[in-house]
Image 1: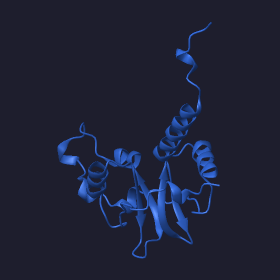
Image 2: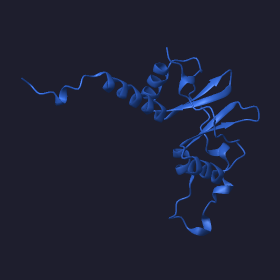
Image 3: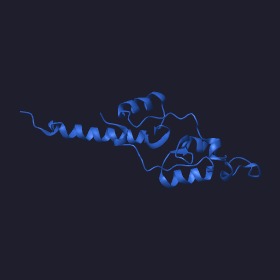
Amino acid sequence: MFTLDAIMTTELITLLPTANLAEARELMHKHKIHHLPVVDDNNRLIGLVTLTNVLAATDSILRDPDNSIQPADVAVKDIMVTDVATVDERASLRQAALFLEKHRIGCLPVVTEGMLKGIITETDFVAVAINLLEQLEDCEPDDEFAESA
C-alpha cells in the first residue's frame, strides 16, 4: 500500500495567524501555490488560507478609493478556514484521493497528533495519474502501427 509520505510535500510554506493578506498573496504568487497552512509557534495546524479566501478578501478595484481596505490591514486569522479537513500520514493514497473527491476540496494537510507534517493536493494526484498512465502505455503492445495480413 502506498502511503501519503510517498508524494506529499514536506517543505511547506506556512503562515502564522498574525500574518496579513498582503503576505499571503505574495507567498502564493512567489511559490505558485494555492494553499497556505496556518500554524502556531509549535507548528500545530490551526487553519488554512486558500486562493479562494485570498480572492474573496481582496478589496474590489471598483470600490471607492477613500473606503478601500489595504491588504496589509487584513489579518490571516480573519480570513483563514479553521475547520480544516486533515489526514493522518499513515493513510493510503486511495483514502486521501477519495476524500478529496467526495468533499470537493483541493488539498489535505497531513497531520500527526496535531503537528503539520506535509500537504497533499489535487495536483499531486494528477502527477500520480500521469505516472500510472505512462506505465500502462509502456506495457501495451504497439498494435496501432502493425500491418494486417
